[in-house]
Amino acid sequence: MAGGGVPPSGTGEDGEQPSVGLGFETRAIHAGQPPEPSTGAVVTPIFQTSTFAQREVGADQAYEYSRSGNPTRTALETCLADLEGASHGTAFASGLAAEDAVFRCLEPGDHVIVGDELYGGTFRLLDRVHSLTGLEFTAIDLSDAERLHAAWRPTTRMVWLETPSNPRLQVTDIAAVAEVAHGRDALVVVDNTFATPYLQRPLAVGADIVVHSTTKYLGGHSDVVGGFVATSDEAVAERISFLQNATGAVPGPFDCFLVLRGIKTLAVRMDRHCQNAAAVADALAAHPAVERLYFPGRPDHPGHATARAQMRAFGGMVSFTVRGGEAAAVAVANATRVFTLAESLGAVESLVDHPHRMTHASLAGSPLAVDPALLRLSVGLELAADLIGDLHQALEALPA
Ligand SMILES: Cc1ncc(COP(=O)(O)O)c(C=O)c1O
Image (cartoon, rainbow, N blue to C red):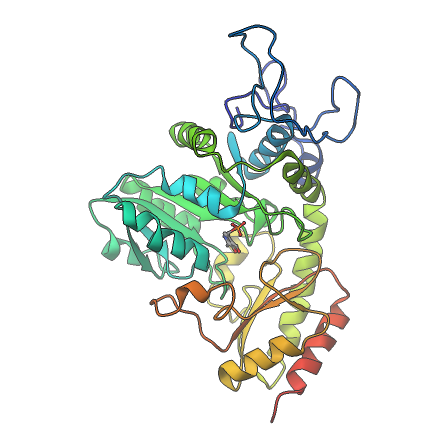
């Protein structure tokens, strides 16, 4: 079952996933996407319909209304759940809508421990939406799972983490966090947006729920906004599926098609993102205008060993601070020509972000506020030499 209360199109008649035993790249292209039975179309069609004709009143049928279920959405839910190694996948209209559904699984008075490096919108959702309805949360450095014990309350029901985190790419040992949380009957949620299931599969190392902004690497082309929840916990899956229909933050069929199409090339794109990011990180490490570099692929990164153990490679994101503080960082962000100054990440084109004033502005004044001298790069698929040349010209324009 893959969300929406309807049978997944990728499930065989005997209910078995046809993709069992196949590799990631093969499943990314085929899971949940058999040729369309009525026409043989090789690509899952965009079922651009809001409703489905019913044979007779009360007849049991797969699809009735597209908020509750749509075949293009089912294909996406089946495929991405498969890639995450989850038995259930539920697609949402954005990453934040997916996160909202997960937080709604908790009750007023419940306590959540979150990593202290967090996408600004996730913090805002907790701080200005869910805390108003009684959810409590504490942000701590999760790079040492032992710190969990001190922050734990009798009401703690969930631990939420990003690894690598946004924006400084801190790495958390998922298995270590899961060991502590499961001993105390709490759910572990991993935002796997930065790594994608190609690089890291949190459920396989103990997480209970994976969330995604499919807007990023999964879509991969900066042309769609979407979110996803994957889990093999039956009770959670039932609740998330209920919330998807009851609150209605569903992606349209065309958006599902775009994410599905992006996923087909995820593996090859991620390989190149990782290569280019490593080359950019090496170039930045050698540049005198760079003060601190954050890239989990470098041996001096504090999370390097954990990243090596739980990830296939180190991802396509690189962050750094510039000597000269905020003014210098802003000058560099404004001076790049190949890197586009924009929010978001994970697409074919390289982007530069000034988190303090852009993606993480909602953290200003909170203990999670971001260093104003920090820049975050989403390293795209252009020629690495062009990306490095662009950063050099932007850094060299800084006053000495
Ligand atoms: C790590 C992470 N999680 C969640 C989100 C939210 O996703 P969306 O913008 O699709 O709502 C973002 C957005 O940038 C993100 O970077």
